Length: 272
Image (cartoon, rainbow, N blue to C red; front, top):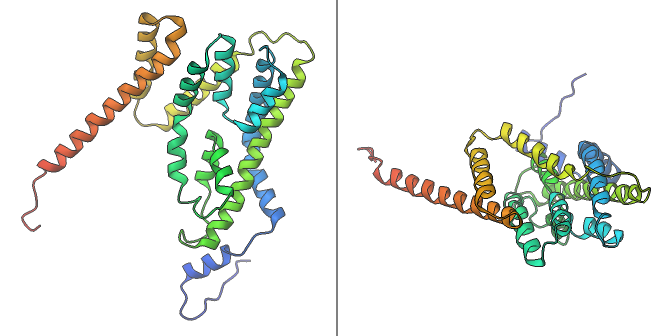
């Protein structure tokens, strides 16, 4: 049966909703909710993490370094990129520049969640550290527990966010362990390196349907084919990323200038 909620005199229904949601939730309930939220991520992270673990064992490095990467770096596609570059004999400079450019998108992730991470204390450091693509998608879609300026409601949200972030990292670390263990069985792992290509293909398809504009994809193809034509193989990745970034910055500057000019020449209303 539908229930009714009485509202005290002088209080609005919005105030009542905020006070209800601001009640601290049980710790187990928070973990259960976080588990439900992260189950789709788990089904993706376990096989991808295992693929990373298997690929890492092909390098002449201790397998435990692969586990350490998943614990202290947690970069997903960035970790695949590091394995590919190390396997190709890339230097430290190339590794640093490539991973910086690849993970620069996380700057925008963090900026969009700064308000929700406000007053999180030391937990804010881990929330920022664990902000992968999938974790960002989950956190950004979470409804607020109450008014955005209500510090108690915001902390309740942060408790859930912290558990979602921790579980997502757990799935990735478990996947890495699975891959490192499977590699000890000496099975034929030829072709598993295609997991990195498949990952970016899936991300590209998702962005194709999410974005209304198609020109970024045309730009990416143009830059890639131009790089294949004029750049040597060992400079193709960095050259293509740098070229795409420069063109995007140029497009942003032109768009900003046109917007400013349009607002300047807009005729004012006679009543303004």
